[in-house]
Length: 377
Image (cartoon, rainbow, N blue to C red; front, side, top):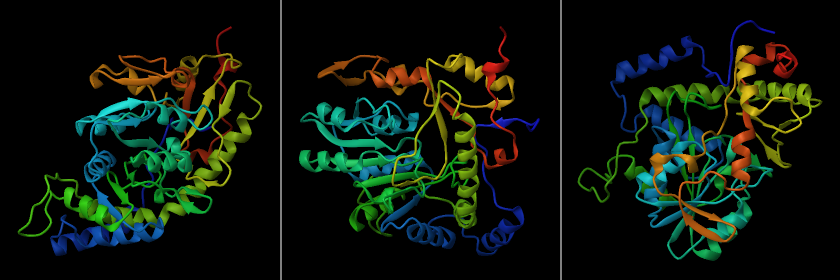
């Protein structure tokens, strides 16, 4: 295989020569931000490409989630998952809300609708669910719960750019979905993100909140922040969008190659792609089971010895972070206010889940290494 390091991900970039004319346009116009021409073009292009109706560009994925929470006027408690990147729960906390963690399903790693329903109280205002690794949540069950209990439904779809379910964009479910365009994502603008709203009024609220709460030159009805995407990031995004199909196809080949090579290795279980789902192949998570001769962390170190830099992801669990302070759990019908990591399925996955590399460049490498064959006897 290649002697160079293989990282868990590597940013996809357009040829620099394609970016230079766009930079020259910016230098000529001196328009660098504040809903400039590149911003408007990318917002329109993404709206069409993703087949959504109401999309607002922002400067990163976490601010996208904060804007959605603010525009949704959430209060009190929010039922969510501890199996996500820290930005999910940090956005909830920074809004002054109380996260209530519910368990996940072992097959999809997404929040379990039954656990969600059990965690709802008269203080619950919303469900914040995560399409983990881009795999869709049980959107039908969650929508039914939200409608029956009068809750807002917000999806952290940071991993789900371009993912489709039964031919429909995954971003068209819930009251809001948010995207991240961070450098590690399959579609990146260095930094960036978007909020997809269910209606025009919600988009207008997001548009105001991302720009200090300003509605017009003389009207500032909201207390907003600064989440505007710059013209540079938007211009880069236009180039990246043209290359997305190519990048996705390259990642698809890596995914297929890994699945074929790992099929006969006992104790290594790649996460299945659900029927009816068109994935973006952003991630390649595997479960390290008891049948594998190395524990998850030993495999992690073994891969590093082979110059392969994978991740224990998500790790640590959000429910184990002291910085979040008191956390509510709903487990086996009992609510508790404590720092705890053994939340049923969550606890097992925190010890076994592993994310392998899925850079497009890996298509030129050899078969995946099995560190267990090389361990000391």
